[in-house]
Image 1: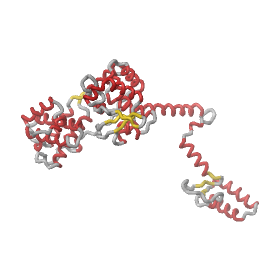
Image 2 (image 1 turned 60 degrees about the vertical axis):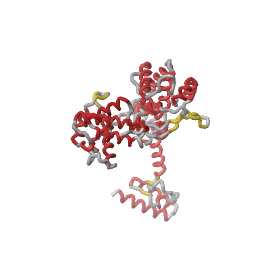
Image 3 (image 1 turned 90 degrees about the vertical axis):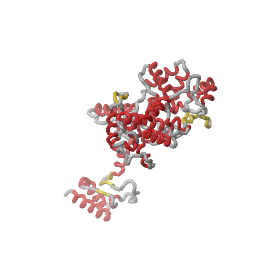
Image 4 (image 1 turned 45 degrees about the vertical axis):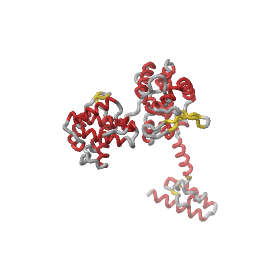
Length: 428
């Protein structure tokens, strides 16, 4: 099958990948044809990087099928093949020894989507049913994002600013101050910096979630970018990229190397570009930035993604714990001595409760009227349906009745006699 030129990058991201597809075609031409046709379809509605990921996954799956089974077509793939593949996948090497569960999850979901789509599209090459069940997909493991604390972030920035190659400082500062993904940084257009009103903004092109966004630029970055473009204007125009210079065009691998090298120079261990994105989000939430604003800054489509950072605001947790500890210490240190506590121990909720309770407490009972209802009884609380009293208030009620008797107030005498009688009955 001839793949259109527009799909060449999506279907064949590298020469090595193309050679591997060619080798697989020798053993299973129909299988490879179906998968590459599917990848061509993906390129019509998914971002190129998403197609690249699907291509790598299906290529690996095809290699396993050709090596470990006698499968020659997609329709011949059975449940048994999937079960064997899952066991094989779990034994593959990874950064922590074996392949991470999240990586296994992503691979299986990608292959399951492949089966779902070609079945839905009624391709004759599709199996009768999807051999990968929902229960085959490992549960998602949601580890807390790794970020740099303020001290490590400061050391990294200092090392970047002291680097002899301007590109190093620019890459680190751009990642640290904008929260860009490494791929987004590499793909910034030559005219990405935009002046809106009297402020400079960075236009980030379609990225992981296919949502262009604008990021406000820190004044230091504005100055740094102005110096960069003044020196590299010819390269920027030629490569149509903001971060272009006399070296090879910057890519994600270069960004990873720059950040890792700078971190090593700063003496803070291994650092990945995405950690700077997590660091900016954590710094922002620790300093009171609203989650909605952080979501807009990072280009999150759902607040669920941003809420992850609410779980890692360790500085806020530490500060609040210290404040609470101080209050508990005050409790332990003063309770047995003076019998009183500092006024700041009372929280806003406690103050509101105390105010409302005191306002509702009457001398001879309690007003149970809901706060939302307006009181129309003024001082005649005892005749209100919401007025409640009990045996503990009988002495007060008797004094009020005696006062009414002294002043010849017949109606009030009857009222308080009834209240005394009612209050006395509740005690029996």
